[in-house]
Length: 174
Ligand SMILES: [Zn+2]
Image 1 (cartoon, rainbow, N blue to C red):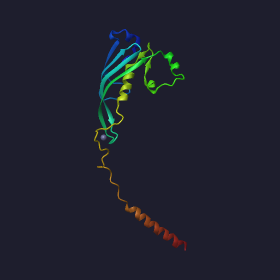
Image 2: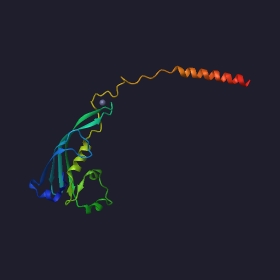
Image 3: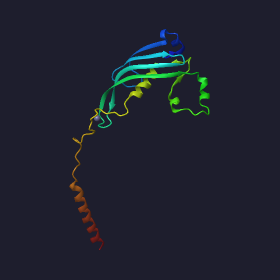
Image 4: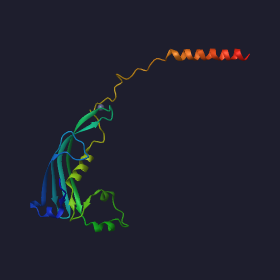
């Protein structure tokens, strides 16, 4: 997926570009290709980017530590503001910015939008924080856990020999 030149997007019919996705995403391990579509619309002062896609990933259960397959369904919509980069220093002035403002991504109006980077980020965000193979997963089963070994007789014998040794030393010293 080539980065989109943003001004070119404004010249398209409906100012919109639909990208069909059917591929693996670098750095994001999946069992099946990521399939779906990304829709990028130029809104004048912003880009409206949405995606519907799905794939299957392998996760590790937090409770039983077994690996399991998870169908990841992405259905997201994001506004990316188009702001010239020269405006940046002013925005970091004395003004106290709200936390929300910090979260909003922005791009220069004459810059490029990288669909693959954006999709990668969205996929990472959609990975569940709580990973359970099954909602009723009971966790690690005690069945099959190693049985503690019985205390070895040798140790007892050793301590007896130890007492004898002490006695022998005492006798010799007398
Ligand atoms: Zn589990």
